[in-house]
Image 1 (cartoon, one colour):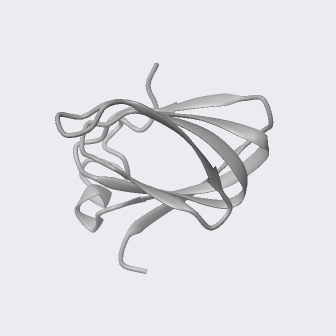
Image 2 (cartoon, rainbow, N blue to C red):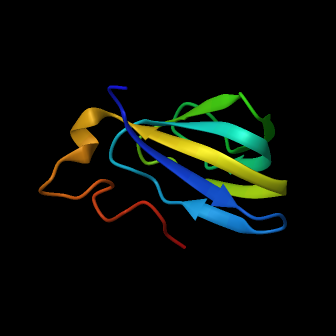
Image 3 (cartoon, rainbow, N blue to C red):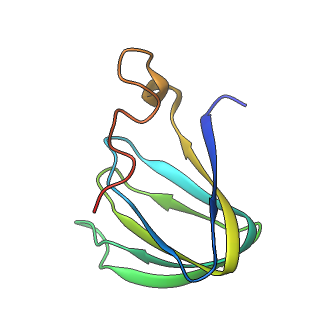
Length: 98
């Protein structure tokens, strides 16, 4: 696979915030279901949506996402290869934020 990949597990009833990244990313649900709240961009308003296993959503550069698992979920966060620069670390120190 050409993208840098991370697989994350989220227990049921738990929420996780993915801070906006410098590059566009792709969030894909591998197992379970998540309730996703996306921050707005200059082109689109904020939105809430369900994602089932096998579904994915594109995250624009700078866009924040809040996920909650129903009941539990595994998801992948795919980032462009340039984000995996050894000098910055895999996520440039900005994956998760509050």
